[in-house]
Every structure is written in structure tokens, then in C-alpha cells.
Length: 237
Ligand code: HPA
Image 1 (cartoon, rainbow, N blue to C red):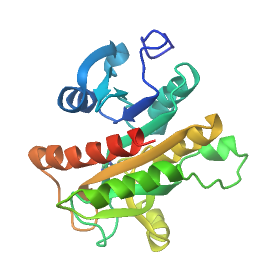
Image 2: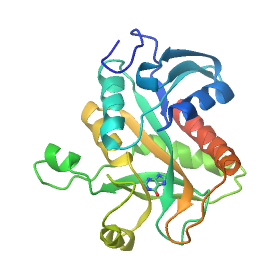
Image 3: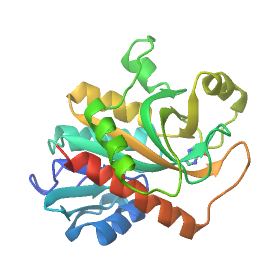
Image 4: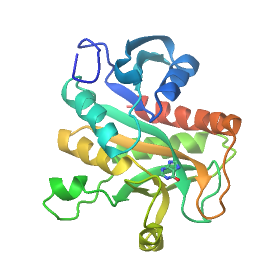
């Protein structure tokens, strides 16, 4: 039992899929894991453990934004000895190079957040993905017949969903940022701190250039591809 997760020690698998939405965690447990059992519902942030192709796998909601996600990532790494944490989330495309429902595998993340500035005393740190996980995720996509494009590139982890200064994102896009979400920069930093593996895979759910949005059914289908990529990358050790 940690402060925000009600699992006993050993109830959480060394591999955890990490969606923002706790109901998405339930959907993943019900649709992808065998024998999934709920281990925590503190604050409604559901967590389940089951198995996928013979591997024990957990799925834990993280909530939205780096402060919420960091609470769960810290506790999973520190209290439950989690070795592999794979975010499966949604993102908003920042460039026409990226289409609706495309999948972005983040090799790194930039941010406007103060969290890393505090941790690194104002210096710039470059949060990056675990290379082995990244490589296995890309290899998994090459074996799959995916309907939508897969991009390996930079995410922008913004602190505000309702961004009051969108013009500040433009130089980041000019330097390669593909899409905005709200968690990856702190996730990669925490994984580096604890010496564990992390990867962030996001499906484009909305487009900040073309202003398209996905329907609930489209989101569910494209999320399925992302979950399969995450499970293959995390379990193929
Ligand atoms: N902004 C921030 N986070 C997001 C978005 C967005 O447009 N879409 C999905 N996650």
C-alpha cells in the first residue's frame, strides 16, 4: 500500500501500461488482459493486474498532467519496484506532417513545465525514451498492418490543456515537436532517476492545425493498435 495506490506488495506486475484515463485502464484490462483483477481504486484511479501472452502485466491510470502522473510513477517505481512503464495516451497534432489517429512513439519530450527546471536548478535536461523499448515498439509496428502512420519523434508535454500562450509552441514545432500531450517529459525524467525503462506512445485524438477531432469509436479502434504495440514492446525482453 502506497499513499495513492492500495495494492499490497507483489500485486503490481513489473510491467505496467499507463493510460491517463482510469476508465481506459479498465477497458485495457477487460479487452487485452486475461484474469485481470482490480488492485486499487483510490481516488477512482483504477489499477488492474492480469496477463498477456503469459506475461504478468498491470495497467494503472495516471490522471492528466505531469503532477498527477508523477505521483503514480514515483509510487510505482519506488514502492512497487516497477521496471517498465509504458504510457499509452492521446495527443493533439501540432503539424500537418501528422494525421488524425496516427501513432507517435516519443523518442523525447520538451516541456513548458517548471517541474524539471526545479529538479535541475534551471538547467535544461533532455528527457528521452528507453532505447530498447523504443526499438521493440518500432519493430512491433513493422510486423503489424496498421491503418495509420507511425511517427518516431518529439512530444511537447504542456502544463496547460487550455494553453494561454499557444504562440510559444511555434518554435518547438519548428524544431521537430510533432504533438502536444501533458505527461511524457516528467515520465522519462522519473524513469531516468529510478534507473527504469519508460516509453510513451500516443494516438492523435485531435488536430490543432486542421481542428479535426475523433469520434469515440475511432478513438477506441486506434487505441487498440497502440495497446498492442505497447504490450509487444514491453514483454519482448
Ligand atoms: N493538448 C494537450 N493534451 C492533449 C491534447 C491537446 O490538444 N490532446 C490530447 N491530449
